[in-house]
Amino acid sequence: DKRNPNQPEFLQAVREIADDIVPYVEKYAPEFIDLKLLERMVEPERTVSFRVVWQDDQNNIQVNRGYRVQMNSSLGPYKGGLRFSPTVNLSILKFLAFEQTFKNSLTGLPLGAGKGGADFDPKGKSDNEIMRFCQSFMTELYRHIGSETDVPAGDIGVGEREIGYLFGQYKRIQNNFTGVLTGKGPTWGGSFIRPEATGFGLLYFVERMLYETEDSLKGKTVSISGAGNVAYYAAIKAISLGAKVITVSNSNGTIYDESGFTVEKLDFVNSLKRNLQEYTTRYAGATYHAGKKPWQFKCDIALPCATQNELDEDDAKQLIKNGCICIAEGANMPSTETAVKEILKSKILYAPGKAANAGGVAVSGLEMSQNRIGQQWSTEEVDCKLKKIMHDIHDTCLHYGKDKNGRINYMKGANIGGFVKVATAMRAQGLV
Ligand code: NDP
Image 1 (spheres, rainbow, N blue to C red):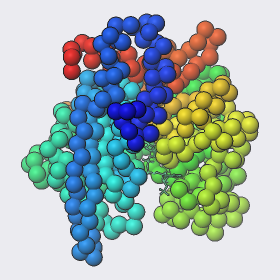
Image 2: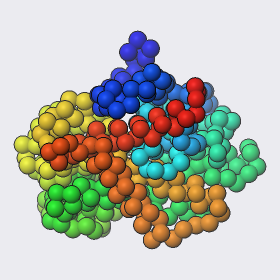
Image 3: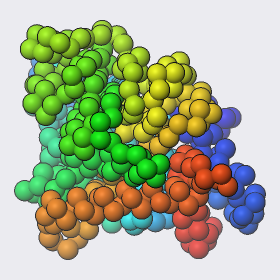
């Protein structure tokens, strides 16, 4: 705590992992303690912070702060998204980069871990402002990244448009067309299924968890938070697998549609551009709940897909009381520490984000492979690889997380499974 003051999210992420790792290494791998592998892992290999100056449409000069946390390169080039949000700070990025180390390890792909972004708020900005910001941001970032060094992707506030502007600026400075970013458009080096990957992967994981208990998604009621990339594709896949999705939300409130969302309804939600309260003007049976989260509504499965610490202890208690059988995280660390304790105590199925939302980075890893060989795989090929990766992550969680009574602690399984691979590689690579 003393070395990382004012970094509550980072310390939260480390505590959640240490709780599982420390007893494991004490029992099975005491040499990892002598080698201080966990102590090394919590210290980023490199952190850069830089000034981003740009001019808005009124010709005012704006100053933001950009970052890249290069956390761990023992398994491959640093890999992880860029987040543009006024909430971005070093604590948030270090927690995300730390989680990314375990997540990327679990995918089985050769990926190191990093995370970056800026305290820039893209909301309400014009297209030109976004472009100018992205160009200025990349004018510094380019010297720290590269297709075999560090390959950023999108995250909150960074989608295909922003990746396009960032990629264009990198190419202009470096005069080469390489896979330095993932999440590119499918006609200019991107992979099919990348936009869908996190949401689809989440549902492939949930499908596998339910299968383990001889259950399925058919007929299940699903509550989703968020209305962004992850939430949208999670909802689409849940519906296609026979479930009924009853909520989506954003930072202003929640739509509850008891009759269930359809693809058409979800596209209408997208067209509302954050004005979710207008949904009920077209679908009168639905209700809008200003300032409320989705967790008060009765559901079988809850999928938090918005942001960190959005599901607290009371929400967890409410879900469990309402008979929820499974909580799987599409977002990164959406459940607070006390919520996680409550969920684990209840023994309902619980998948942490580092396992359940790894589909996005997995397909980013596949995008890197396609860029290296100069080819593009079909939608079916990528989807099939994604499904297999999610099933393998599930089985790794099962391997390390199943207790003698047959109960699976996915959190423990993901933490230990992710750790063992990284720690083994770090040991092999010496004192670095
Ligand atoms: P988007 O920016 O596309 O969407 C985020 C959504 O969450 C928006 O609807 C936003 O609403 C909502 N939201 C943000 N803050 C809150 C809040 N405090 N309460 C309620 N809703 C909120 O981001 P993504 O969908 O890409 O990412 C969502 C989460 O998934 C993040 O935790 C991200 O790190 C994680 N993730 C994303 C991956 C990806 O491939 N995109 C991969 C793995 C993890 P509003 O517009 O009001 O802010």
